[in-house]
Amino acid sequence: MSDYYGNQPQDVRPGIDARRLWAGGVATAVVAALLAVVGLLIARGIFEVEVLAPKGEGVWGNASTTTYALVAAAVALLATGLMHLLSVATPAPSQFFGWIMVLVTLIAVVLPLTLTVTPSAKIATAVINLVIGLVIAAVVNSMAASARTLHRRRTQQTNAAAPPPTRRQWTQQDPPTRYYDR
Image (cartoon, rainbow, N blue to C red; front, side):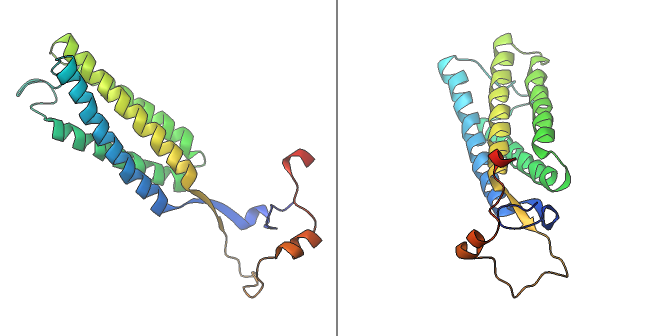
């Protein structure tokens, strides 16, 4: 059985368009950084909650809004790299990526809850981390799906001089099997 273009199943392999994936990764990094800034502005400006621990206390030290935004952007780029690696090396990249991102986000949510700061600061930091983690996971997963491609395998028997069939040639050949013909 052949696909729509007459390729045999062994003639193509799944791949990923790295330029599209990484362009989306950079855009995701910008979104994550801006999301961190918005979360901090809401927590500090509207609810008057100190999100990060003061200097010398807790894991965060005296991290600033800029540092928080840059870390969020770096996490988005790391997630893109992880998705790229999983896309070329594993049979079900979206499933592995989803599980890894859920667990990393869970760590980012639980970690602030273990600090010795006010409960409002713990909860605000955990919520911001949850939102950033979920957005990064969802956006990287969806843009990786749109960057997936099929590559033709190179074989020694391939006739490089033969162009792909034209529409007229295709209609003269057997039509492709459609999903409702199976």
